[in-house]
Every structure is written in C-alpha cells, then in structure tokens.
Amino acid sequence: MAKSYYETLGVPRDASEKDIRSSYRRLARRYHPDVNRGDKGAESRFKEINEAYQVLADAEDRKKYDRFGDDWRHADRVTRAGGAGSSPSTWFGRGRRRGGTQAPGAGSSGGAGGFGDLFGDLFRTRPSAGFEGFAPRQQVDVPITMTLEEAYAGAKRMVQTAPDPLSGEAGRRIEVTIPAGVASGARVHVGAPGRGGAPLDLYLSITVAPHARFERKGNDLLLQVSVPLVDAVLGGEVEVSTITGVKVALKLPPETQNGRVFRLRGKGMPKGRGGGHGDLLATVKVVLPVDLSDEQRGLFQQLRKGTALDPQQGADA
Image 1 (cartoon, rainbow, N blue to C red):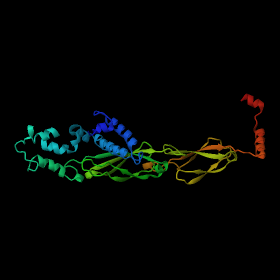
Image 2 (image 1 turned 120 degrees about the horizontal axis):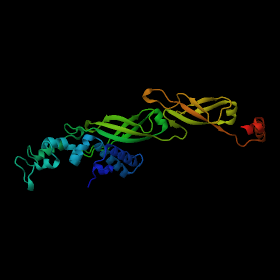
Image 3 (image 1 turned 90 degrees about the horizontal axis):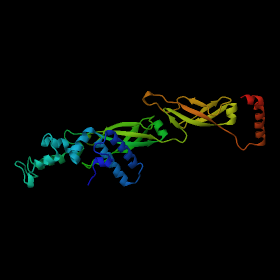
Image 4 (image 1 turned 90 degrees about the vertical axis):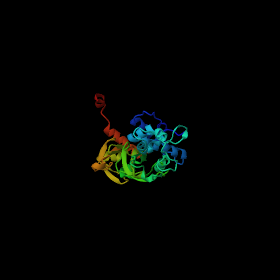
C-alpha cells in the first residue's frame, strides 16, 4: 500500500506548516542526490519527499488532499460533476446502484453522457495543460551547498524537479542563478514555468561551506596574516591574499604588535542589492625565527640586555 504524503514526510495529519517544512528540510538533506551519488533508492526517496512537500506546503492543495486523498488532483472536476460537498465515493455512487446495476440515465462505459464519458474526459485532458480551472502552484525546496568563492562571485546550478506521478511527465533539469554575496541560511526564490504551465516556485536553501583561510562575519572577511618578527619590529610590507586570489600589499609600521588588526576596505563580500563590498580584516600573527645561528642568537641576547627592566622597576610594576 502506497504511503500517504504525511507518512512520506513522517508527520501527523494535523502537523503545522512549520513542522512540515522542518521535516522536509531534514529529509531532503538526508536523501539529496548530491549527498547520495549513484544511490537510486535515495534518489527515488528524494523525489517522493519533494512530491509530498509540494502538496502539503500549499494550503489549498493540502485541503484537497485531506478530503480526496490520491484523487485530490481531480477535486475540481469531481466537485463540478457531483455537486457541492461531493467526494470520489459519492460521485462514483451516483453512477451505479448497489449490486452493480446502472442507475437510470447512466450509460455504459462508452455511452454518451454516462459515467465512462465523465471519467474519459478527465484522463483525455492533456497532462501538460493541467485540469480545467485548476493549475496548482508548484513549490520545491532544494538544498544547495557552495564554496565561499562561489558565494562571493555568484554561481549557477542545475536542479532536478520531481516527475509528475499523474501524467508520467519526467522531472526537469533547470538552471538557476545564485546571486553574489549570498550567505548560509539564505533562502533564494527562483521562479520558473512548471508542469502544465503552472508556476513553479524554487526555493534554494543555501549553505556556504567553511573556508580553510577566511572566516566570514556579515559582509566582512577575517584572515590571519603571518608576519616575520623582523618586519613586525622594524616595519615592512607583506602580501595579503584576497578571496578573489588577487594579492594586495599591507604596509606594517615599526613595532607592530602581535594580534593587531588591519582593515583593507572593500576587500570583503558583496553587499547584495545595496551595492559595494565589506572589508577584509587582517590579523597579524608574528612568526618567531627558528634554527638561529650563533650570531643571530647573540643579537637577541644583546636585545635582551638593552631592554631588560631595572630590578626595582620590575618590583614596583
């Protein structure tokens, strides 16, 4: 026996919209094809989850599903055929009496104006056109994982929609554009033509993967910059890599302290519609020399003598 949409998403029939959305996201992440490459079972499960969510996430479609079950797509035609308050069972009942004999005025399966004609009208409707007066809005949530570089520049992705179980129409691959500057947790809406001309709402749930060198804080990027001790003491210039791969020069004043933060304006993430960029915050990490020669060690000893505190001064500190 086929699972109901509620069983597919693992929620009770009285589940709230929030619970349905939460369960869908959890299951979609678990069975997403990108996470289960080559696993046909996971791919099939992902399509079932998408189909169930498309219906239960839409308030009108959910009402029809709760009332008509698997025949919910025929709801409008069924209601028009049987009158207000009809259900599939009452509609079928009006075509036949108990015991299987036909009611007066009901033709055979091929007779004009009979049960067969009404049923035939339903299934002769072109799948791509949708049912008369009923073009449900299709909604699909797609989890997307991207690199920080992709989030900086924007990216394109191919997403797969679920097949239509009624018409047999295969799912489609749609190219979507993710805007520059997008952050983890963002939900990007992409509109596209759906099945039968019904509008398709794609919602891309964005996750930006952690970066090996950069840390994001709002529109700013944080980076540690290794600085030789001699440059920190005497001043100098070091190269700083940006998220685009372009290197910029950072001038260090003499006696730069370990942990000092330098702001490189406009070298952070795009600010989206507002325009402009955040900043790159470079934190100095002083690197101590190793494998000193005797001469170098002697220089540090002289430095120690020259900067040693007076014993009395140290006691008062």
